[in-house]
Length: 577
Ligand SMILES: Cc1ncc(C[n+]2csc(CCOP(=O)(O)OP(=O)(O)O)c2C)c(N)n1
Ligand SMILES: [Mg+2]
Image (cartoon, rainbow, N blue to C red; front, top):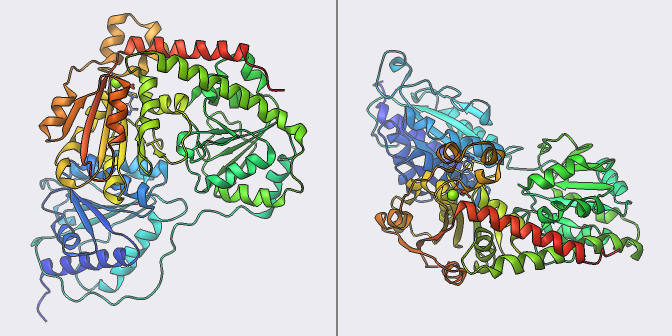
């Protein structure tokens, strides 16, 4: 029998993997150009059930795939050629690992005989991403005799990506030349189903443990990212008369009597921080960005702290949790509500009222201070973007100051999904992540991002107008890293050293940069202009960039003024008790 044509075998192998992935829900592929990846690139493009987007920069491509996984809960395939191209994906793989987002990472490779002999574009890709992947597969060059295993390989990789927790998986694909071939008949489908992502179920003892803690009047719920059923969290809070410290990513930051939106400002005021000390803390999902909140949680004396995360992942850098429960936080709250005997009596309402009065006073002080300034300050930008985004939009917020400003100052909103790459808190890949989300959903996406983060991911802009997405990017341009002005380095160093190493002005014209990519871009000079711009993020609005200029030094003053006004307001507000 003649040897099968290597190109045809590779084509059939790749078509089989793609078919198996598509049969189990994969619909998107993100491909970066290169030769060695040809068999898989052609298989993805040939399958009409797969939407393929092509990106020159693999680093950006990795984050686009991450965004697809965030938006859909299903992995995108991201494909690169061999060599350094594969290493460019590492940042997105690390973020996907920590954020528990599924991604199928396909790295093309040279065959074994070309390793260690100086062949071009050949590096050791074995376990390239270390412990950041759920699984690593290296099936070797397909030769046709192994075809009975192909579907199994595809399904194991998908199961690992959708495991508990979900995450990235590397499938290293070695191909020999010729790289172009025609697929033959695919191996038969074996009919088995995929495991799918399932969280852990809290057991009855864990539900009872939380229900027992719910006997305390002075309880607090801290809701971070990673809550699938926020309504159940709010229902438990309402039943117990407990405040919910609601991170914008939690889905709980809605207009609701239990929701506390300005905890960072409240806890900066020491008498208030002491007055609000709870007996029990229920920490749901990951942690909000506020350091002030984190420190307060770590320093609370004698309070019982119970953590609940879908996959039992620990978010507890201060080691203050007494118990960690694995289970979807909303589902756990619903189970606990079901176990409670009678509605709380009104005596417990004093506790919630204390928080309500404080948070309302803070909200008013923030609004008065921030909205009083004519020029758009950075807190005003965050407030305006959150308030003006049209219904149904997803807001993607970058580290570093944007996520904090949204968390600290924005008013609650019931109809706005907020996302941020907080797995590893990188400022990289933010626009690309948002692009992936926009590609995978029909709703517009708005990004709030600093200038350094925007520049870091500027290759996300390549070809953007032709991608058919509604992506509105608001860049807060303070010509450098504004967050560092809040850190001890700023006081400890001489002004010149600080500016060189941390301020890092770059002087790039971001409107010009966007325009060079064919994107409609404008400077936004007032909060009104910003509000109009953001409210234009509607279906069909396309790719748009708006730049708001601010100053790093002034920004520190604005933050200080806001916190001072909150402290004043808290001193004159009734205590609520
Ligand atoms: C990939 C990555 N590199 C570096 C950092 C460290 N870092 C944190 S914030 C920051 C500056 C961010 O500046 P910008 O995006 O303009 O936001 P601003 O602080 O001005 O709000 C840097 C470099 C990081 N978090 N991630
Ligand atoms: Mg900046």
